[in-house]
Image (cartoon, rainbow, N blue to C red):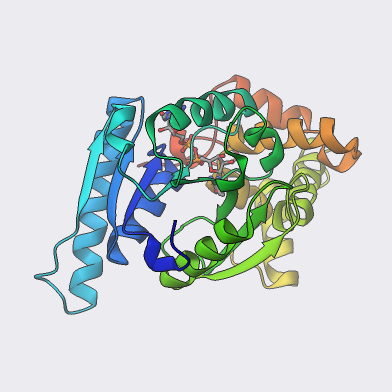
Length: 284
Ligand SMILES: NC(=O)c1ccc[n+]([C@@H]2O[C@H](COP(=O)([O-])OP(=O)(O)OC[C@H]3O[C@@H](n4cnc5c(N)ncnc54)[C@H](O)[C@@H]3O)[C@@H](O)[C@H]2O)c1
């Protein structure tokens, strides 16, 4: 592994949902060769179509209609063998992430950096099943990844300084602002924001105000672009629930204890914009 961000030319992205597709698009438009992997062929095809369309629009906006992007999709993990960094963006479940990281170690070289886009699972827990933990790190992008400027860079206790330096250079090459964060549940952003989303759900559940009025109140008082219930739908209620359940167990903080309303919506398959229904209804 050389010492600069230029050590990276091929990026693997695992998971082609909301975040994986955005990260793959961002890396492709920043000039990296991208290999996007998902176990679900349907999700992969939809993501590929969406990414091509967005890359086309992006190139047009930049006045670079002739620009070509290298983005390969596949559902075979071996396709990721010759990558310099892999960014994992699969479901927010520790076991699933551990299984994936363990399998990835069998496929890639010892120099490939393995990064997780987890919303708040401890990097040390994901890394605990791996042999080479020095190359494991958190890269927490925000939704939509091509637009939001922040990346939280989370170093676990065994992440090497070299891995961290390469990832920080890589983040800058994507035109993002990396912030270094300790390996604690929720890192910085979700440690602060998720209790607010939870409180908004409990406010709705208690009948204190309508969903629209809760969102308006926060938007207009805090100058936030979205209300907390809209933001929850945008993130994905399943992702939020998985995160909150883990953070509640890890920290014991009541502010992470998921509201009954959130659990009921997820059980009913209403997981936000991606399913067409959450706190609000959406037509795709
Ligand atoms: N949604 C957000 O706003 C947001 C923001 C920051 C971080 N995150 C984190 O990013 C990760 C992905 O979230 P998302 O919202 O994109 O989820 P999503 O549900 O939209 O997509 C997850 C994708 O992963 C695929 N997948 C699941 N298991 C897999 C496996 N073992 N191998 C390959 N593919 C697999 C699924 O088929 C699906 O396409 C989560 O850890 C989440 O907490 C989400």
